[in-house]
Image (cartoon, rainbow, N blue to C red; front, side):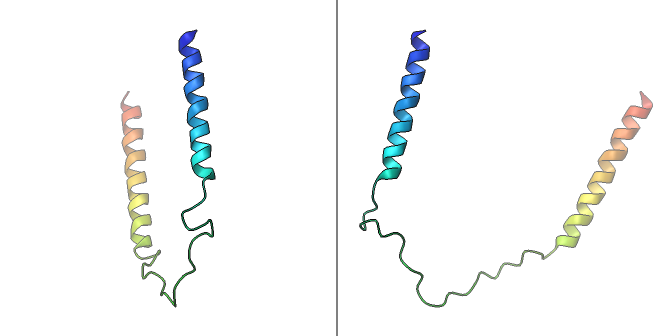
Length: 76
């Protein structure tokens, strides 16, 4: 029973310490992050580059796993 009380006490203290840490003001007076400077270009990372190859690989992998699974169960 004492172990349960220790766990509950430790959990409550951890939650209180976490809440106090989040509630603190920032060093700059709580004004938040600075505004962005100038005109920054967006990152040049395409999202859809090679998507077709990835889909084909996924379909081939899925078909392989299904055939492997069906052969294993048909032999038993």
